[in-house]
Image: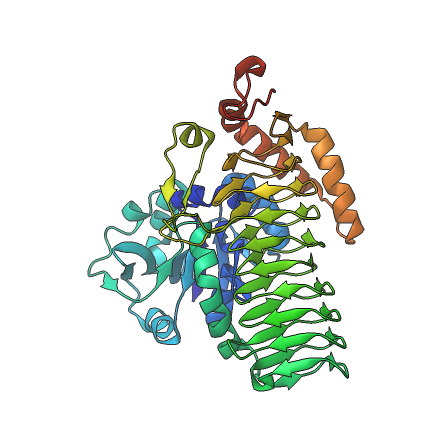
Length: 435
C-alpha cells in the first residue's frame, strides 16, 4: 500500500511555522506528525504532496519519499494535519476497503483509494479541493482522530502525545546513557536515557507526572530540573539551573536555560539564559536573548486570542484559541534582544530581529527588524547571511534549495509586511515604528 500525506488550505492557519516546511513536518510530542504516521504504517511506501514552493526542499529533507503525485496503486491519503491517533483507529484505516473515506468531528481527513482513482484525487488535492477529491467515495466513517487547526492545538496536545509516543516507541526504565553520581531521578521506571546522553551531578529528573525521554547525546547539566512528561532531543543541552516543566519538548540541537513550561522547540534553537517561556511554539534557528519573557495567561483568565495577519491585528479581529494558556508562536530564524517581553498569544514571523524591552504588538509579520519604536523591513540578503552563519555554528549548511525557499517566503509575505509597517514609511499603529 502507498501512504500519501497531503496539505490542505487550512495550513495557512499555522502562520510562520508552515512557511518553510510542510505542516506535517511540525513537532508534537516526541515526533513530528509525519514521523508518527511513518511509524504507524512501516510497510507502506511514502508519498508527500506539498505546496509547489516546498517541493525541492521537501525532496532534500525526506530523501526516501516520493514528492508529488502518488503512483496509480491503492493509496491511503491522510491529511498532513493529522496529529492524535490510536492503534485501533490506525488498524481500522489500514484494514478498510479500497474505497472508503473517513471523518473526524465532521471533517474529512483520510481516504483509501483504488489505483484507478488516484490521479483524479491527486488533481483535486493539488487544487486545494479535498472535499471534491473524495466526494465520490460513499459511506464516510466517523472515527476518533484529531486534526490540528493551528499551532495552539499542537501546544495543547503535545503533553498527551509525549505519553503516547513514549508508550509505543520507547522502552521505559531504560538507561543506555549515563546518570552520574549525585543526579536524582524520581520514578526511574518512567525514564528513558538513550545512548550517549548524560544526566550530570545535581540534576533532578522527575518522572512522577509523566515519562521523560532523554535522547541520543543530550545533556542535562548540574542543578537543572526536568519534569515529565518531557522530551530532551538529540544533542540538546539543558543548561545548569534550568527548570524544564511538564509538557516541554526540545527538538534536536537546542540549548535551553531558564524556566520553560509546556513549550515545543522545533529544533536548532537557543534560549540559553534566564526568562520564562510558557505554552509556546519555537521554530528552528531561533535565538531568544537573555531575559526574554513570554506571557501565557491573561489577567482576567479569559481565553487567549491570537492574530493571523497584520490586517486582523489592526482591526482587532483576533481568533479565539479556546485556551486560557497560550504564549508565543515564533517563526524560524527570528531573534529577540535582551530583556524582551512578549504579550499573551503573540505571533512573530520568520526572519525577524526584534529588540527593545516591551514588544507590545501581538502580531509581527515575517522579516521585520527593529524596536517597537522604530521597525522596518529586514533586508533579505542580510537576513540570509546571518542565517547561514548561525547554521554553520551547528555544522549545518544553508543549501541553495533552502535559500530559494526563504526568498520565496519573503516575497509571499510582502503584502502582510506592508499592511503592518504602513505605506511609504508610515508609522506602525501603536508602536511608532517606521519602515
